[in-house]
Length: 189
Image 1 (cartoon, rainbow, N blue to C red):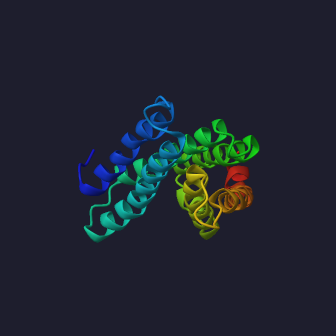
Image 2 (image 1 turned 120 degrees about the vertical axis):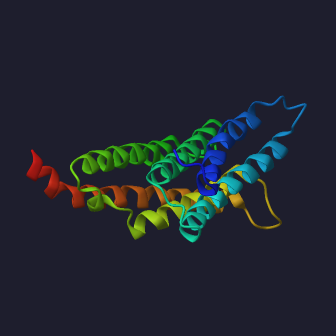
C-alpha cells in the first residue's frame, strides 16, 4: 500500500466520516442544530474538495497507484452514503432517493468488480453522465446539510432539486452501464 500525498488525502476523507456523522449526535446544549449543520457542511465540502484534489495531485505528481484507484471511489461512496443516511434521518431527503443512489452504487461497484475479474473493466469505465451525476450530488448534499436561508437563497430547495436530478441521472447511468455490460454478460453465461 503506497503512502503518498494523494492516498493520505483519501484516507483523510475516510477518517472525516465519523466526525461528519458524529457532529449530529453532540448534545444540542453543546452545539446547536444550525451550528451542527454548518460544521457538517464544511466537513462534507472539505471531503468533496479533497476528492478532486487527490486525483489531480496523483496525476500531477505521477503518484497514481492501483491501491489509490481502488480506495478513492470507496471513500467517495462511503462519504456520500453517510451523508445521505444523515439527511434521511434529519428528514431532508426522501428514502427513495437514498435507496436509488446507494443501491446504484452497490450495483455498479459489484458489476465493475465482476467485469474486472473477467478482464473487461474498461467496459464499465466512468461515463460523462456519471461525472455529472456525481457533481450534482456533491453540490446538493452540502446545500441540504446547511438547510438555512442565505438571504433570499434557499439551499434546501435548490439542494432538493439537485438531489432529485442526481437520482434520475443515477438511474439513467445505471441503465447505461448495464447496457454496456450486457453483451459481455450474455457471452459469459
